Length: 293
Ligand code: R5P
Image (tube, rainbow, N blue to C red; front, top):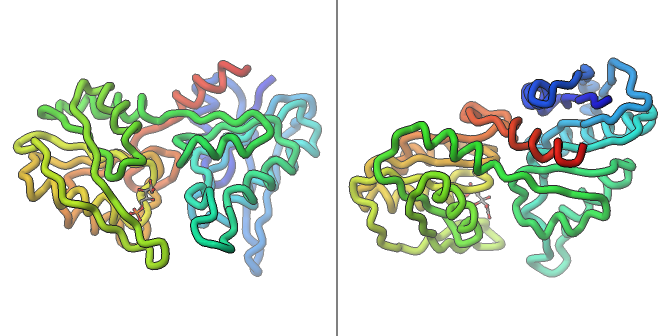
């Protein structure tokens, strides 16, 4: 039998996933000790069961990562026959190489820690780059949130929608969202200063006047990437500017920054629990899981 363990960072998503799959959940109790150490307890029997641990690793990512490792390790220890990790947002994915000499390739460390628990396979959603999956020796699958976001925006009745990637790296994502909406798509050019983190977006003209625009990205952290693109679309008289994002981390005043740049609405998924997480990835993750069950 399959049992879902909704981790403390993904309780709602874990419950929805169990509903989609028509399987039981096993509650997880979690708390922090006064010194900040994490405690988790699984309230159920896992012996000889296929166990799916659902735990995202958005901020506080180090706590959520430790809870993920604890749950995977405990599930194996409690004699589950198979342990599957669903990690909708995989923290540290943006440090997937050594950009400057001496830097740690952080995502490699995370991958090795996850594998050390003895987990059998992993599912993540809109991983920052698919190359990260090659670092895993276990089966690692990337699930696209685009069908879920596409379904949401298709019901919005947008006027001549035009989909934008805020940088070239997000172009494939913009192309596939545009395909769901039968829309045009294009991209901005962005440069990031590797030391200060500051972002510069080059000026580009688009035929967006009086049309609805959607800027799509995998992660919104400070919101600067989106704000730069949005203010250009605003200056070019786009009708309404929407933002579609898989992982709305929304740090450091990100929401205000984007709204002040002319954004009308921000729509995120429940890979990250946030005030804009209105689209659930439960059904797309369930579809992927079913293929391996
Ligand atoms: C970067 O390559 C990512 O895809 C996002 O564009 C980036 O993480 C967004 O960061 P921020 O919201 O701080 O501009």
